[in-house]
Image (cartoon, rainbow, N blue to C red):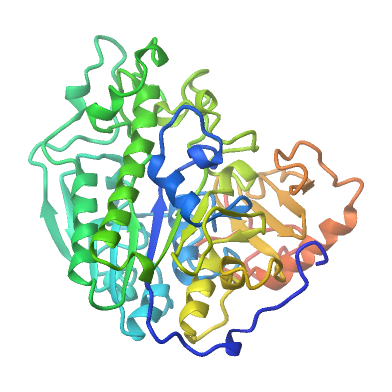
Length: 501
C-alpha cells in the first residue's frame, strides 16, 4: 500500500463536535465524469458547480458504488460495497402476471443507513428526488430507513419522465399532471415538436422547491438532506429557455426516439440544458444555505450515481435516449459508460464544500468511493454504527490533517450487463466481464493511475495481481440469492453455484 498509505486516522483521537454540522448530499443521475466545467468540459455550462469546486475540494479519482442507479444508491446510503450490499442491480418488481409494478427490489428493513444514524443523532432528515430502493409501504420505503420526509419519485421507471402523473410524499401519492408524458415514445417521421413532450407540472421544479423549503424549515436544528435529482438521466425534457441558450448549429437533425425514451428536436442542446438545469438546482441549494445563515455550518457533497449514458447499437450518432456522449467528450477518454465497471461507468465527480473546514480550491487524487461517504460523515460526528462499514473516513484529507490514508481495496460485484466484477488496490484495477454468459471473459489488469483509459491490459505481465483480486473477492463477496453472480475461482464451488441465465 506504499502509494497511498502512510497514516491511519483514528476517529477516537477527537471528541464529538460541539455543534453538529448539517449534512447535504446531492446525487446527480447519470452525470459523466467529464461533464462539468471544473473537469474540463468546454461546451456545457456548470457555473455553480465550478464555484463549489473553487470553494472546496474536488476528487479526481472518485468512484460510484455501482455502475447503475439502484445499487449505487444502496451503497451510498449503507456504506457497504457491492460485495456486501443487499441491492446489487436494478431489479424491477412484477405482479403475478409478470407485469412491472411500482418500485424496485426493496432494501431489507434491517439495513442501517446514514439517515438512520443521523436521525438517532437528533437530525431532521429528508430524501427528496429519486429513490429506487423499494415501493411505498415495503421494507425499502424511505420512511423505514431513517427519513422523516420523502418527496419525489419512488420508482425509477416513473422517473424516466419529467412530467409524470404523480410523485410521492411519504406514502401519499400526489397527482401533479392530469396529462402526463410517458417516458418512452418513437416518432419515425414528421416534425419533432418540443411542446408535444411537455405538460403542466415540471417535476424538477417541485423537487428543488421542496428541498429549499426543507432547509428553511430546519435551519435552527441540525438536518440531513439527501437530494437526488433526476438530471441528466433521459428522457430529454429540459426547460425550453435553457435549450435555446445553446447553439442551434449543434443539432442538424432531431432525435426521433430510435434509441429509447423520447424524441427531441435539438437533442445535443437538450442534453447540455439538462446538466445546466442540474447546476441551477445546486446553486439554489447553496443559496438557500447562505440565506438561512447555515452555509458555514453545512457539509455539502456533490456526486453522481454512475457514469454517462451508454452508446446504443441502434444508431451511429445517438446513444440511449438521444445522448451524444462523444460530442461532449463526456468521459474525457475513460473507457466505458453507464453499466460498466470500466472507469467510464463508475468514475464520477466528487466535490466537497464545508467553509472553514475544507480549504478552498483544493484537488485530491486519492482513490475513494461511495462507501467512504458514510464513514466520513460518521467520523465528522463521531457516530457509532452497528456494523463495520466498508469505507474509510476522508475527513483527514478534507481538513488537510494528512495527505495520505490507508486505502483498503475497493470492490464492485455487479450481476447485470453480462455480470462483472472489479477490484481496485493501490494503482491497479482488476476486471472481469461477461460472468453470467456462457463464455466468461478473461481477467484484465490495468494501472488506472497511469492508464485511466484502460488501454493496456497487464494481465500477462502481472498475474500476481489477479491472484490478489481473487483472494480479495473471496473475502469480500458475500452470497446474495436475489442478485447471484458466479465468479470462477471465487465462489464457483458448493451451494449457489449455478450461473444465472
